[in-house]
Length: 545
Image (cartoon, rainbow, N blue to C red; front, side, top):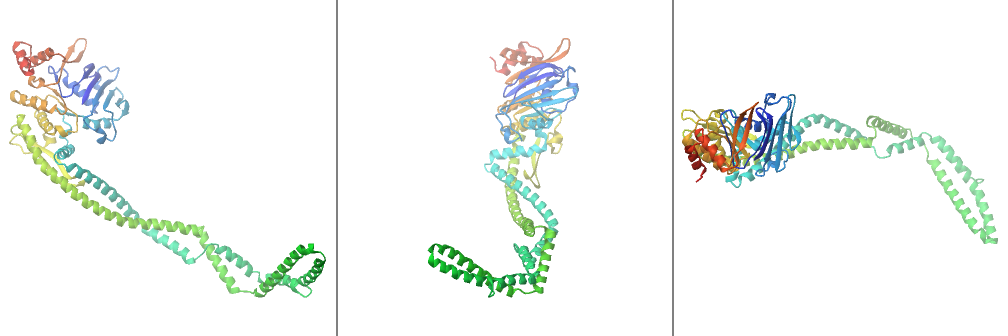
């Protein structure tokens, strides 16, 4: 609800602060007194387009500040941002710039317009907001469906979850399929590279081993000469081993005289045995060495292949690991397509089933709602009015498979037409009042404003409108500009708007506090002056003895 409004330097208002009540707030005053300026200020604060002409004193900016309380509605679930329980919206209009603030923070006009949809609905002969717009008709219908069908909300939430996931999967599938068509060539190329590496059958350290073998085969004669020469020197009759054998015999004799030489003799024998092993090994090694041109050619060809692959891929083993990973990822995308298509089909069936359940409830409720609204229209003296909620099938979106729109006619000779096209003239406020009354318990806005709701009505119709507004204000905050005492008498808060004509023409507003003030205001509305007859009528309206 709107708790208060502060207006400064706006059109004919120098400065004005009003505190409103929950329930029914009425504004009365002479024609041209400036009542609509107050509503225009509220509209402006919520993002309506205005020019710099609204600035009263051009030396300073105009300012409108609205304070809302919205404990009735959980706006956190509706908006993309959270709000405190009390929200202050302000709009400053200068000659060269405008500033909008939400709880002190600068915001753009779109944010204010988004808020308006959940806070205030304005209806007049010249403009009508939320209920006229077809995009909100389905929300109103759904809110009603949820209030009368216990399964509707759960089905609807499940549907939105399934549909949202379906959209995400469809988007991902399209992306994967597009990429996969491009990746087919890449797959072939990766397989070619992997096959080239794998067919070479290169193993770890093979290059080092081949180079070592190549070194030996390239120097067979030199190695044979060197190793045989060492063997010959060690093993000939006049060689080192024969001399060592004689020395060992001498050392054995010495040990027989001094046991302390046993340790030296042990080391000598160990060295002698090692030399014998070396002699035998070198003899066998030199005898087995031989030229092998065929093997030499094989090694050179193998090393040439390894060098070619290294030039092409760098580290061969790292390259193979990278290519295999890339291929696995791309081929995994192809398998993901199958999985996603299966999930897509399942979600599509689920969304279709849930949307059918949702549509059935909507269609069932449209008849009930249409009848209720027609009943309200009859009560408001629109005896020829007909109302119908039409539900048409459309492709699935987040709200289901239904296109919902309100249709109405107020004349027996006119066919039903979309509410948005009929929403004009003096009857529109009563039409909106009828719709609001039916949707009062499920309405998403917390305040509604009727400008000149009594246009073209009197007597019985006025009383019906007054009764309807009174009932509506039990659920949401209502503002109305009226000239009808019957309507004004039902208000919880009464504001009288007047225009001063001193040095400058300015709009003034007074909130009536006492019973006597209200009595005089209602009496004045009834006859244009306060006299015994008008006061008696006002007392009757106000239930004053």
